[in-house]
Image (cartoon, rainbow, N blue to C red; front, side, top):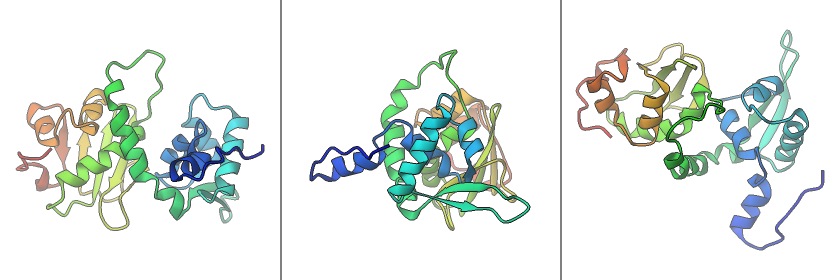
Length: 211
């Protein structure tokens, strides 16, 4: 598929040349969680066709956003991962999540949901909350699944599944997670009201002023 361009000498236009196509930023969202196989990407991008996903990944490789590498045996599969340029899109996705948050009122019956889709907006909120507590890894458990966010060290970032050694574990329902992720509920308020169960570190307890 030939590359499309706005043919405008403008930074916004150049950015949209690379990431403005449908599904591209959602692929970035998935790969911010780490290396993924094609089948895993397809499973967590409900609605995308196999041809479209393959085309987008090829274009993202061409534009230097994604690389593909072969796993060593016995894996013998290829995985996709973001380049540094691809990972640098995290602030843009965070801003988009903030902008789109008012549209997350009632979940429609046809809406798909994956637990880790809340990771991007949660990174900023939890980083702010735990700024002075030395918390680096937070597990988030929802009915739909579990993921963890990395706030320090090599972060920020996230990955599917529980962390091996999280500093804190948070359990909540999807509606509560949406409220927390989009600043409709602070972590302290969620814990105090019982909407959020927290364990694993005393740092969650006394932070009554957190946002």
